[in-house]
Length: 397
Image (cartoon, rainbow, N blue to C red):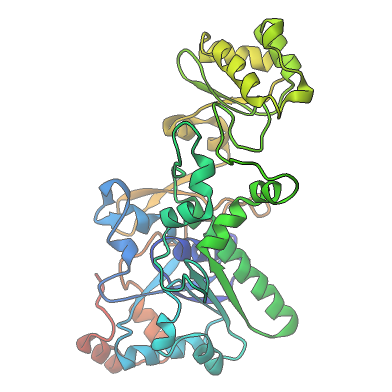
């Protein structure tokens, strides 16, 4: 059992994707994550991709909410805020991804939390940062892909901008959120001091493009950062890209143009030397593309393998699930869900001493641990009944 964060308590006020997914990473490692939701449930319980549900559980709920205990609190009520403050006293980390200032208005923001527990780690995830001209703009993955240049460089000159096919900024932001909290925990272990950690979708999107921006900002500035033809990015030389075959596609990564030209039997006039792989990339890619389009994918893979050119087939999701390395890595786990039906989740992506962290708790029913958590912080049976009756906490859904 992976319990590297056993004994660490995280009080989570998170919704949608970046916050829940980042905190789930800590929960996988053994942290006691208490996910606080309103009595009607957080956003992830109400929306999910493709209108799919498993016994009423949305896909968004199943993505980022395992290994957490669920507590329902109506934070509009002072009695609920009092419960939250008691939990702050017992927590190492507060993690939240509301718009900046929301928890401050409830008396649960950074300064209030630090007054309750001076060594608290307060981690806030937002769309654009804790302050600045975009403070009140809606922060959402697609909008940030557009603002950050990611949609532009993922598109092409021929077809214009294109969004990445997943919520890439949310996912990278979640990883940074977890990393920032872990860094603060290490710092606290050394110094005894807490820390405020701020992560934004906008900064995550730019960080995701570090290679591209570093290339853009140093030396000559290109007039256009949209890729052209099969080449996968504006700063790559040929043959780096995705090429159509007669019955599919193949990705070609690093490889010599001289070797590739010989392997494909390109006529001398179409062979671009390795020294011109970047300046003549579009010319080289066009010649390679025309040749590969006449061959089947299987034939292309055989030729590229025989000549040591780095390449891969383009897998759809069915291919990925069946892939032998993916299966060996146990990248997907099927477990019994909270409703009794099986659910399949993406595994924690890191091994620890060869072990993949287990799914100790599938995403829980709304408020499933409310009773236990209230008992832990000193509310007796009569007080708990009163809190349920008054609606300060929600009954188990």
